[in-house]
Amino acid sequence: MYVPAFSMKQRITLMANKYELITTNPDGSDGPLLAFAQQKRMAFKEEVTFYTDDTKSQVVFSFKARKRIDLGSGYDVFDASGQQIGWFKKEFGKSLLRSSWQLTGAGFEASGTERSAGIAILRRVWDFVPFIGEIPLPFIFHFDFTDNANQQTILSVERKMSIRDRYRVSVQDQRVDFRVAAAMTVALDALQSR
Image 1: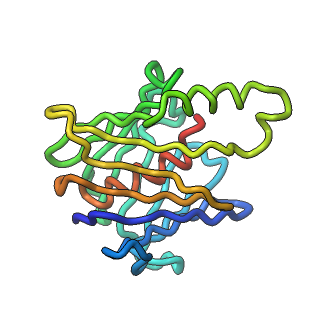
Image 2: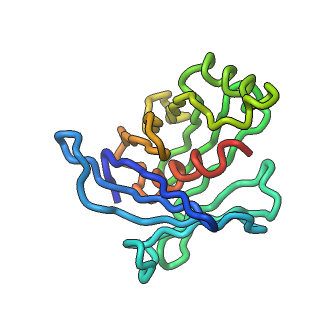
Image 3: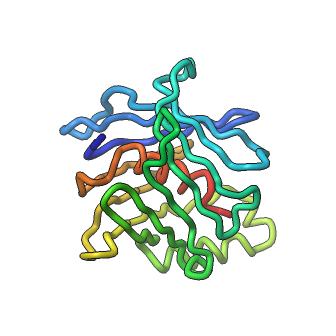
């Protein structure tokens, strides 16, 4: 299931983070809804389910933490029937200065890193300054995922400046299933600060 470009918009509610995944038309405008996701806050074991729309009547895919405590744990991506189609994991050692992730799907293994080392360091300093760290993060950060075999970029996730979180996603490699790319994009928003 290949989708070359899509965007993700976040809706913040009291008990859950909700995400809309929307096709990007060739002219850059928003197209139809691809999936709707919901992440429950304060869950013991992280799980995000993606539906066809916000009625949540039909599941299309999901991702779930392998362990209750997610430090160093991976997240498996499942299709609607529960078959694993990919996985991802934050690399905590590498992420001390610049957030890094592993991403695997059918036919590829990739590494993702924050595009700007300077912004990565500023984000970390921002969090440690008293009172300032409580103000929502004003920095825009982007991630590029490169194939471990040939170092070619296969996926780019760019955060856009807006009141609610919004991301533009470009999938440069047809091996990257939309469901795996979408799960990784939601994880970058929902799990990045952990």
